[in-house]
Length: 543
Image (tube, rainbow, N blue to C red; front, side, top):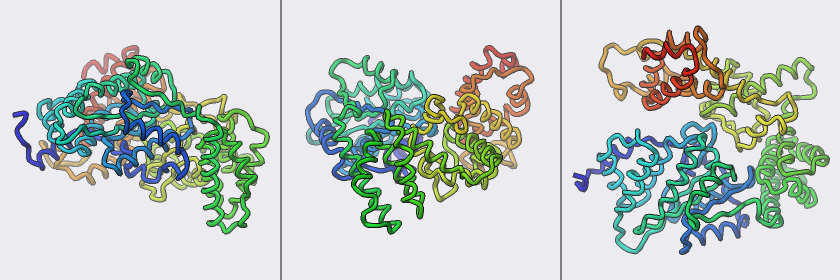
């Protein structure tokens, strides 16, 4: 049975049954505008990575670690593109905190398995054999999924010639929400060393956070190669940032028809000094200048002027440019009352964006947090240099770089109280907003079906989207996680209790229509845990 050939249509159906994070690959639609390394930059490092990938080094994992803003993800995308073009990229998974499916490990193995099956000849059938044999595989542990969907199919490959070589790329592992999952993933990735018929290299990037350092300490000696990005000679990094700034400022000069001498060698060299090795500083500065349009030159002068008193540690430079962008968005011509109103709105909108567990478009966000779409759009209008704000307002808002989240949530970095965000309070506010929007939208038979027994797959997706708009779906999926992160304890007769009394079954029905049954099970388990020390535990016990 296991070796019985399966027709192509059945193969496609079996493979599509695996949960898949669509934003995980380096070339997903949402990532299409994210940059690669400029020509003639990162030359020695890329050469070293390619040499490792193509050589006989027995260390199958290459860990590129570095501080925030040092360009790890750009390098990972460049490496991914190189091997994709050579048809040697097995799979890629780019983690992103607050990115929904790519913010946790729930769909990591299944997404990797799907990509490997599509990338490697003859693996498609073998992965589908495992899906047929283990019909409950998606509900099993990450360990079982990895062994049955990845290692076992790969071990059964019988290459016609030689020992093929592929690379698997995992970017920003530190952005994975669960520290225990991070350690588990590192252990599983190290197990590729058992494969003898195929050589699978792992290229992994992250900040040098404790869970990852601890995870690597558990891998047998000689199992991985470390490269500390921020230890590269400053002269090499400065040269690459110089080329980046020269290229981008040159484009701005042409776009705005500025003098041929603008900005000048001295200014570019000074900006390299301010950047202090952080590519994210250079990228944010260039976006801020470009967004100034006719005031591009004035914005460059502002960056130079405000940086002269702050030539300290690299993180301080990054904080300074974030302050520059934020303060520029609040006009000095506003009255004090108008400024206070805008500061409050900025904290509310930005606080929600950086705290959301999956990104939302501007209209869904404004509905969820009860701010008019016009107000929200106007509030964010001057922040394109730190936020990815699509022209298509149905596309989600995203941060250009996670360091902006770190900045707003850290009082020691964001010293201006006008912009500080209290993470726990913001989660609690989002709990309240999620419950309110669900209480208003959810009801029995929300999709208005005429009779019982209708399958979810028989209902048009547009009908589900109409009855369950994105902000309602977000609330249904994530309100309990926001409750966990707020550290609030639900009480008998409180908001959570009343919602469950009136809408528990409506909420579960909505999750089923959304195709999120597994998430419903997780949510109930999480809610039970939260209420172990809460008076509403007896109520939940009835279900």
